[in-house]
Length: 87
Image (cartoon, rainbow, N blue to C red; front, side):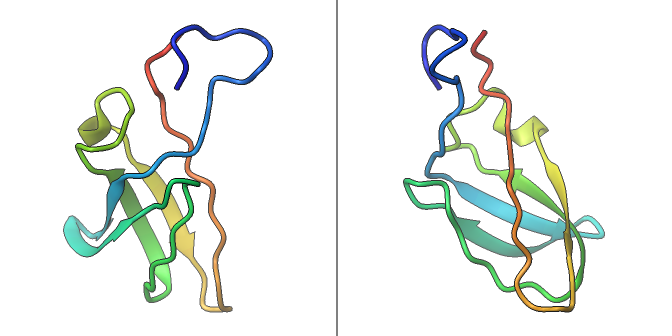
C-alpha cells in the first residue's frame, strides 16, 4: 500500500474494506474490517470463500478471494493477504 516497495519497510498494511463470505456459490455474510484490518464475523463451521468488496484498496478486488476453514472449536483466527498491485 505504498507507492514504491523497498526491502524495509514492508509494502503491506492493514486496511478498512467490506468483505463477503461465500459458501457453495451463495453469499452468507457481509462484514467490514476496521482501519487495523481486524474483523469479527459469525459463521457456522465449514469452508468459505472470502472476497473483498470494491472499496478494498487492492488490485482487482473482485478477482481476489481467499479460502477460509471455520472450525467448530470456537474462534477461528485468519490472516488474509491480498495483492495491492504495487511493485
